[in-house]
Image (cartoon, rainbow, N blue to C red):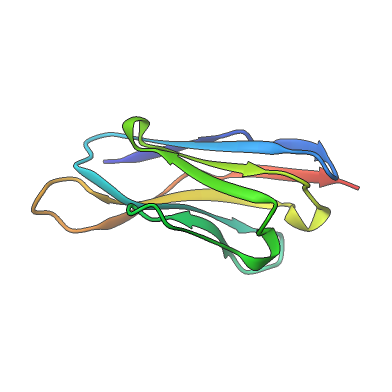
Length: 121
């Protein structure tokens, strides 16, 4: 199986920054889209950002200009740089990746374990 391991969450003051990392391990033929979602207590999960294999990116409107997604394909890793953090960013952040494990195989979606981001006001 493929495993995604997240790190970088924590507590930060409003206006501060955090950088989340997520690395994929296992038998991987190719990674397509990598991205991040988040879920705040009592709310639905929402897509925060994603990076397509072709290089394009997409962001949730509320994080545009503050968050930056990037990926290092050589390391099977995706990052989320979060600046100007606000209390409304408080959530558990989950990374995901669409992965083919073999050339003739299908695409499957894998998820990280989640990392808590807390912002104090």
